[in-house]
Image (cartoon, rainbow, N blue to C red; front, side):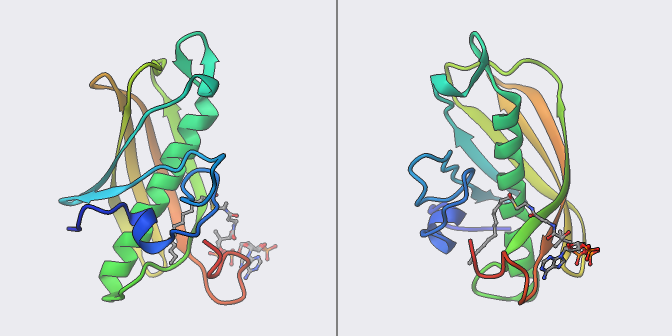
Length: 156
Ligand SMILES: CCCCCCCCCCCCCC(=O)SCCNC(=O)CCNC(=O)[C@H](O)C(C)(C)COP(=O)(O)OP(=O)(O)OC[C@H]1O[C@@H](n2cnc3c(N)ncnc32)[C@H](O)[C@@H]1OP(=O)(O)O
């Protein structure tokens, strides 16, 4: 994979309102995913209201970050595989997050995702979330490009 400096969200879905990744949702997380070699990466700085217990990041927020970032990794992969100039609309079919250690607040977290398997419209993505240079959560999920007629089609 390769790409320029703009985030995938800003480039392909600037009007998106998804809670995790929509640039136009001013109450959302607005994560910014970027292509780096064979991976897609993202740095996100949690805010105090994302806290679970003092100084530690909420697990649901971790899940939302890993879900959206992995979704964009799948969509970008399908775009490249199809030779298209825009990604298809993908949705999450399943994702499994392991919260391995508490994730500290107070600095950025780093997300990194890669395609593990792909067949047709379905892509399996593996991702990690690091804080302070240590992996605190991992994720494996399946993301599906939807067809016309699905409620998500052309809705991101
Ligand atoms: C330019 C824009 C760029 C965008 C970039 C993208 C990045 C996005 C970033 C956003 C990140 C945000 C992350 C998020 O939050 S994504 C939002 C959370 N995820 C979902 O809502 C996904 C819900 N699940 C599904 O839609 C399907 O299961 C999928 C598509 C995953 C698989 O479906 P597949 O076809 O493989 O499986 P199947 O044939 O066995 O169906 C299973 C069930 O699916 C339903 N179903 C299927 N089709 C339709 C339909 N047309 N209209 C209505 N429903 C439909 C139907 O109920 C069926 O059940 P039943 O019929 O057995 O009862």
